[in-house]
Amino acid sequence: MAMRAFYNEIRGMRLRELPAYLKPRLSWENIKKSADQAVDRYIEKYIETSSVEPLFHVCIGGMIFSYLVALPHERRHLEHQQQHGH
Image (cartoon, rainbow, N blue to C red; front, side, top):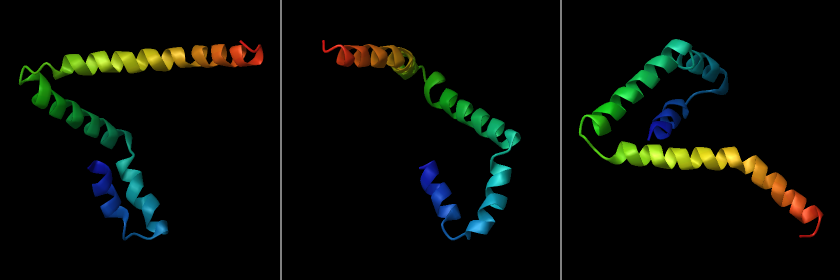
């Protein structure tokens, strides 16, 4: 939804206007403010309501992280198997 709003904002702009529009939005202050707002919304939606979903988020995030950490090793292993015809 945020991407759609962003697209609607820049849709009518000319290309030369785009850097001036994006520069203030990509400043460290704006990024920090946006991250703080996202954390506040998450806390309101899941933590303060005593929802079990944050536990699911941690579990799923851990699975994704472990997959990404193991992926280079698995790719090397697969390449080695293919080279030696196993």
